[in-house]
Image (cartoon, rainbow, N blue to C red; front, side, top):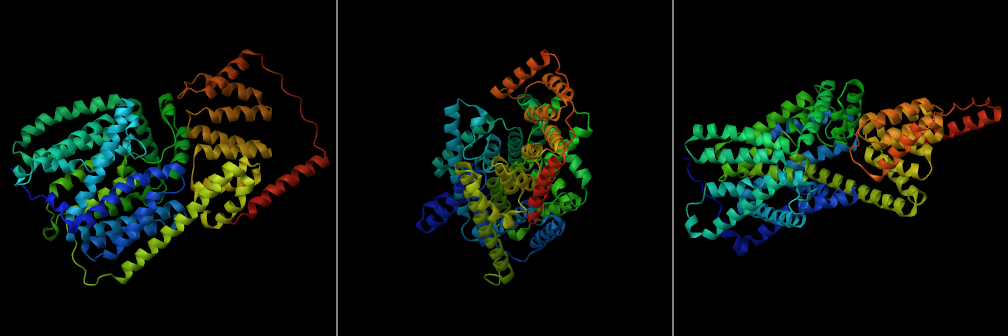
Length: 607
């Protein structure tokens, strides 16, 4: 039997000297999920990212020179070197800033553990209690529907991973109780209630990867607790197989969709095996690779219907290989080994609980990406810091180079927040007052945000809605270099069709159709283009092929389009229109002038 380890004295939370640390830690951990939810209110202002960057900038001052810091520095140098071709991209800069912020938070947590370790547990348990309460209320309101249980997170999957990042801690305190637990029976009851509520909500979300991670954490804790390990393992294996089959059948289409994502991600890795596609560029580049996959592979209809816009690989090792390549994967492995390798001087008191949390998140990351949710990433960094224990006291209070890194990160945080707030105001102005009112603000932001494909797409889409097709086409062509979504190609096809360049319009509509074959809108746009182009036979062939496909999401639009297309196929085929008369010199001059104005608008943008 494993020796019981001394647990933190929870009565210390009530001492006046520690109330300030408890309040500060609780505010940070409780506020992060709320700020994460606020991000999706505007889809532009990332409140949680700014908070984490600012916190990491403060923590960089505590960076100490140790062997682990050298491994961290090696990975940071590789990320910079491998990201040089992509450095102007906003996504790459954000990924580097998040890495620096996590470094600062790691060392800040180690200093907190050295002064008052109870503050960390108080913050984690407070945030856990808030999210469990919110999730329980949502489960009661929705009748236990899994999609509605999300707390302050984006969806039920992120909520399950957030619960998973803290839930093994109270389980560990129950399995390895303190020696004086008989005098604190109410603490045991509170931990049991928190464990039961968190476990119930975790299973209600039907998040398969998170449930598998929780099962692995429970198995680890009980194997540490009891001597009969082999008998336990023999009884555990069939339970794991049965649970895996049940979870697969519970959401079989979603599981097959992830298999498709992994296939497309493997093509990205094969294309850039050594250095990857650049840190933070997966979401922007995935759509282009998915379109290429459907164009070059004989994909089944089931795979085509499961496709969609994807922001993550749903497998952390695969995403690391895709973004950082094999060299970066080795550097990440070296860093993780250096962090998780226990050292006698830094061995923590609560090693088993934090190990169970990290193990659960690691298992969950094989079928999802919990670290894509920033609050979960911060909690994982805190677990790694608590695993190592308190940091050694630095010889100098603040190192100059660490303070310079913190100041640089803080300046980048202020710059990003200011430009995003200005961009959000311009987008709101375009939605309410029209593009003509918002155009000066968009134009002023262009020199600062010209590497952000989300801004370029929003700017180009608003310009297209405002009737400035030449400006919109130039902006969207630039956005296509750094990112790829089906909507971007649809807007670009609309621009070229309005400008009379039907061939480029067809190429963009076709790319959007292959990017998400289950969507009806690209096919509808292509039919409109063929009709305007005078290629009615191709339009009828596309209509006939589209009507034979199942509808993924029925709606009023799909029913209307399908009714229109069926009526069109029942009608006799129209005669081809007569050939247009030869273009006069005046018409040719007008067409040449319009093309020249579009090219001039494109060249005026500072690329």
